[in-house]
Image 1 (cartoon, rainbow, N blue to C red):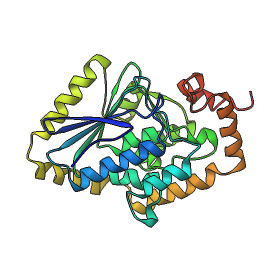
Image 2 (image 1 turned 90 degrees about the horizontal axis):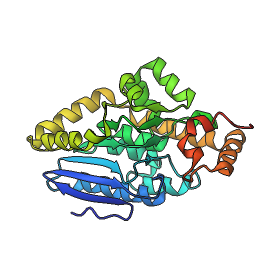
Image 3 (image 1 turned 30 degrees about the horizontal axis):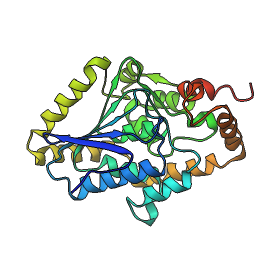
Image 4 (image 1 turned 60 degrees about the vertical axis):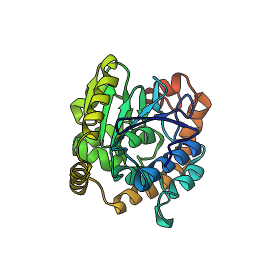
Length: 278
């Protein structure tokens, strides 16, 4: 067993694996990060050793993960497909596998978690976020698409129909306090208390007999998670919509203004998607 990757830093303490995303300034979900996430999840399935809980966090205080790498959709999809079979060639089905991994997973979020970055967090069993700077969003509607990697399925179940429609179709940013109130995340905590809280909770769970914890997770998953057919359908719809001329026009516009680069557009993407043609 080993946890050594190029874009994820790891360390392990008392049955808890801390996996820190360190792909680039934005932690874009691209080829390298997906490849490493696939390897990480495969190891947690096949040979977790004494790991009982995995905490996913970011090396960046500004970006948990900005979104997918929109310039490399076929390439990162090919990497994601390695986690499943030929019929599961999508980021959504890889994140579906993450949601079912036989350890408890916790997303610890500082900064922005948008698009596929938010879907990565949603695939974890719990999300805790820094009150001062965590931002959550599914911005795809602002570019003419829809969340294609589980965002629709998770948010509809967590937020309820009306709030999920608001969150998805507005393509707006939700701060940690509002996300907590909507049920998007477990808790918003002061940044200074976030690390200690998550470490205590993870260590507590890791200290319990694993059979009961695993059984509890399976039982809750059986009640609350989407079917593979629903996830696959969203993935197909995303690919079809993002290829439409209007979507490409909006993405090109955002790219020229600085999409996928540290700067104003990525910091305020909820605003930027409303300014097409200005």
